[in-house]
Length: 89
Image 1 (cartoon, rainbow, N blue to C red):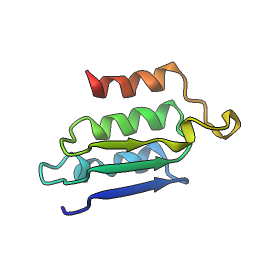
Image 2 (image 1 turned 60 degrees about the vertical axis):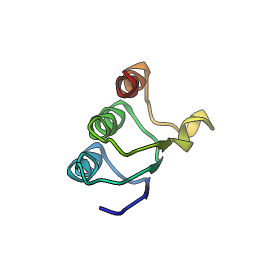
Image 3 (image 1 turned 135 degrees about the horizontal axis):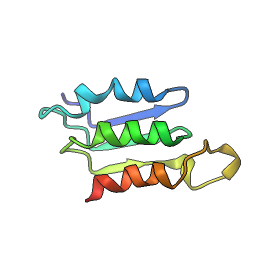
């Protein structure tokens, strides 16, 4: 897999994010930059964190919708952020 960058945007569901798992968790995955330009809720955050859990090549994760207008966000709560924090432990 020679894909170095991947941009994901709405509309995509938690099921869609989970479908990326075989690619992103592969030992041959060379993805270094992932930009997730969508409004995450807790379910999508948990799915994305689960998919990225086994990834060894990713260096940068962009979440542009999560530092702007609160009205554009889904209902990601502390539970969603908690799923992301597991990636760094």
